[in-house]
Image 1 (spheres, helix red, strand yellow):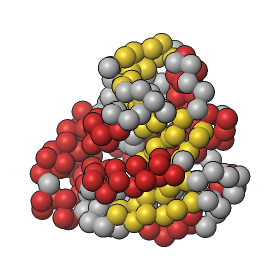
Image 2: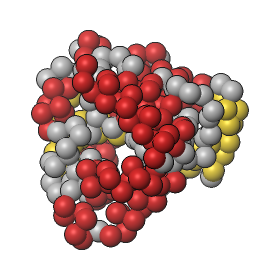
Image 3: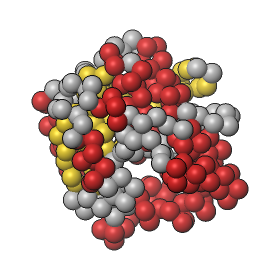
Length: 264
C-alpha cells in the first residue's frame, strides 16, 4: 500500500506491505523506492516492508537547497516512530547504506540487523568532496537526462546491458525522472557526510555486506574495508553485477537476504 505521512516538514511517500518482522529498504541515488520492486514482491510474503522515497526523490518532494544524510536518516526514524515500529532490519544500497549507518549512529536501538550493499562507510576525500559539489551544480544546469545519458553505463555491468534490457530501461526511467533540484540538494549533503569507520567496530550483531563483482563506484575492496571492521560481518560478492546487484541479479541478492534473515 502506498502511503503518505507528514514527516519533518515534507510529505514522505512510502510503501507499507506485508506482515511480520520489519525490513526497511533504503534506495540509492539518483533512484526511488521502485528499485526495490525485485525484493518487495518476494519478501512482502514473509515480512512487513517499509520502502520510502527519500526526501528529494521519487514522490517525496523537498525544496531545500542542501539535504544532509542525517536528515534522510531522521526522516526514517520519525516515520518508524509514527508507525509504532521499534525494531527493524535495514537494507541500504549505495547512499541508502550510508543512511542506514546514520540510523544506526542516531538510533541504534531501532536496528535489529544491517545489510549494506555496494556502499562505503567512509567520508569523501578532498577530491571526491569537490567532485560531489561540482556534480550538484551540473545536475541543476544540465538536468537529469544529460546526467543519465553520460553516467548510466557506470551503474550496471556489461552483462546486464547485453542481456537484461528491462533492468536497463527501469534504471534509465528512475534516473531521468529524478528531480534534479532534489538530487542536487542531496549531493551537496553527501559531500559533507561523516566518516562512519569509527562506529563499525560498535556493531555487535550479524551484518551482511553485499557487493557486485564489477561495481566501479564501491568496488570489492571497499566492501572488504567494512567487513574487517565489523566483527560479525559476512561478505557476499555477486557475480555479473555492477553497482545495482539487487536489480541485476535479484535471485542471488534475494537468496543472500533470505539466508541472512533466517540466521537472525
